Length: 585
Image 1 (cartoon, rainbow, N blue to C red):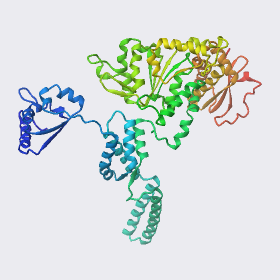
Image 2 (cartoon, one colour; image 1 turned 30 degrees about the vertical axis):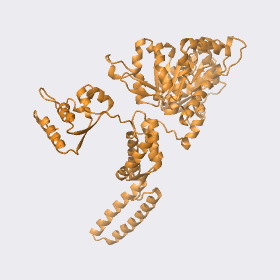
Image 3 (cartoon, rainbow, N blue to C red; image 1 turned 120 degrees about the horizontal axis):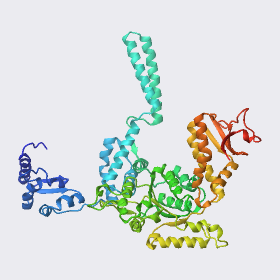
Image 4 (cartoon, helix red, strand yellow; image 1 turned 180 degrees about the horizontal axis):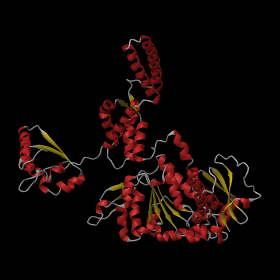
């Protein structure tokens, strides 16, 4: 720095070398050693590395450099003479035991800086949780960052006063100001009054400080929970140590998923078991939390199960990484997943799959219609299923150990659609006749290699939906419509006869599953309602019933949003035709 003229850089560096040669006990440490290559070079002059080479070869100076393996290969390994003058020593990350000892050695420095105290349990938790949940960084760096941020959070919690305390402090400040003015104006009676008020407020402040444990001299304590809170903020998921409030959530996974997914008991049970194994810390540490292949006809809930799981685990469907595998039918499309090889356009950008998992390692990965992908993509997925990792085009290893991988396929769907026409067969555990299940699995085995299927946790067959299931799905879709109508102060209730009518008119062919129902509700309910809302002909706020009349589907007000019935003017059951027509036959 500060070398403006040619020769200044070399002169300064030679001065440093002269001092080192005069003091044989001195050792120079150069961080980011690779930056020496090319540093200070200009036309006709030497760079820093070449200036140091003679002294290094003669052993006149003692030098220790630090760099990363990637930068060593890129800069130093190419210069064989420079490489020969250094002895490469690989420094692996410390073990968990050594990292704990390192943290105990430096914790006093952080305790002084943050004015907190770290429990032994917090130090150990910082190492163990960072090892498991932050795989893309190394010890002790990530554990040190954890205790640093946890200490800062506890310190802020100590210094942030509750609103009650802040209000009393403002009142004391105001009273003291008025008392000083009264004394200045020789109004001693007023001053005595303000003095009494100040004493009362200070007593209230003391009681509040005792209540909230706000002793000025107290030191905040960083516990294991504080460490886990920081990790949860970094990764977006709760920790393995199951909190009391989370036990009920884990035990009712099936119930929560069934709020969005009708039927499909086996699929939901298999996913629930995988989640509980993962959260209890019993899953294999080298494999993804779960890998499943969903088979079944269209519209039976294969993709919806993945969406519901993402919302349940992470609070948002945005945690679902979805790929339509029909976009990966060509051999070269592998590069879209893991990145282009060196020399090709887009090499520096990385792959779509690897980059998204790198940014969000706790995700649900949905590979929709996997049978349409090129067979070479199946081979890429083998190492993900077995080792929980994938190497991208840049040579970086991406961790998949905290993902759940779900693949969907329509293979064998024609057999599942015809299962009601087969006759008597031995029932299987899935509720599907054994003969049909064998036919479906036979088609799956023809499409996928044995080593691919053998690495999956489970192959799950989805059953076709019956009328009872479809009626329940109509109810779920009506709830979604109501969620959109909240701002309009309208709530609708669909009568059972109207629901059956919509089902009969829409799903004559059950092979399409539940997807036609969404289009049917748009036609019979959403389109007429949108016209009525634009025209302003609907009362608001109101609860509306949509029912089947003599000549079509009608709408009438049955109450307000609080559930109170409408007074005079409501339509009776005996006169359904007097409601507002929504859809006429």
